[in-house]
Every structure is written in structure tokens, then in C-alpha cells.
Figure 1 (cartoon, rainbow, N blue to C red):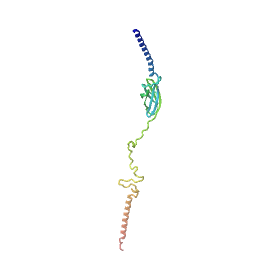
Figure 2: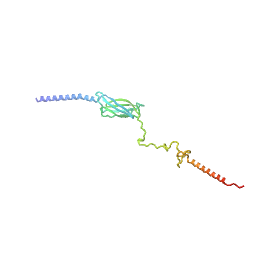
Figure 3: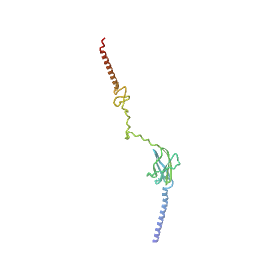
Figure 4: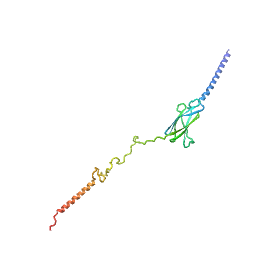
Length: 216
């Protein structure tokens, strides 16, 4: 009796092991297929900014639609003057969202640029063309930036048009007008001297006329 029980137990255990092995064999291919096989690289964003392009891509397994967050994604800027020249790959790190990678890719100058995107493990690729704008011009510094304006030129904006320029002694140098718009000082001096000479000549003539003449 005991031998029959032992044989039955061994049979049940063997059947359980076989069933477990079969289940593992069915599950293993499905798990392997969930993260393997063909992949695709979809462009989510390509925003041109001064000096480069903001990129975001998603690497997806084709067979189940899962994102490949562990993929290695790079971007290469293609020189429009030499499309066959090898470029320097720029890494696009994972963003935290499943299968999404992104970052800023710089361009040497403004213009139309082609960017080649490549994923490794899984393998996928894509390409995008973007017009990169020129940087905005830098405004010139002004008083609001803490820079004082240049000093005005000498006498600029202080003397009225046509006003005489004063000499070192304060006498206006204009030959017709003084500081107050009247005759110049030297005109008065000349007039006074002429008056003195005229008066002196008159006195002399009067004195000569008053002297008695010789008695005949």
C-alpha cells in the first residue's frame, strides 16, 4: 500500500515539473519579444531657436509598441555645403518618459540644416530639415545701463546764435555789438578821443584870435 502511495506522489511531482517547464517555455518567448526586434524612431519636436534646434524623439518597438528608454540616440548636423562630410554625433539623453529622448543640438550658423537621428539597440533612424534663425541683435547700451552720456561740446547749446564771444578780459570780440547789444567799447573810446582833440583845437584858435595884433 505504501509503495503505491509513494509512486503516486512521484507521478504527481513529475507532472507538476513538466507543467512548470512548459509554462516557462511559453512565457519566455513572449517576454523576449516584448523588448526586441524591429524598432522605429518618431520625431516628436524639432523647434528651431537662435543657434540650434530643440529636438525630441521617441524610440518604439514595432512588435508591441513599448518605448525603448535604454536606447542610445544621437543627432548629427549635416553641413549643407558638404553633405557627405562626417559630422560629430550629439547625444540625446532619455527624458524620463518611456522611449523619449531629446535635447538641444547646436548649429554652426543660421540657415537651413539637415539633422540625422540614429538609435542603437534597438536600431532605428530618421532625418529632419530645419531653418535656424539668426540671433537677435544686441541693443546698444544707454543711460539705463548705467553708462553716462558723453559730455556736450564746449559752448554747445549755451550761447544764442549770433551772440558775441567774450575774450579773455571779458570784452566782446564782435566789432559791432557789445555784450548788451550797444556800441562796442572801443567805439566810445575813439569818439571820446576825437572830442578831446576838437575841444583842444577850438581853444587854441580862440586864444590866437584874442591876441592883439601889431600896432601900425
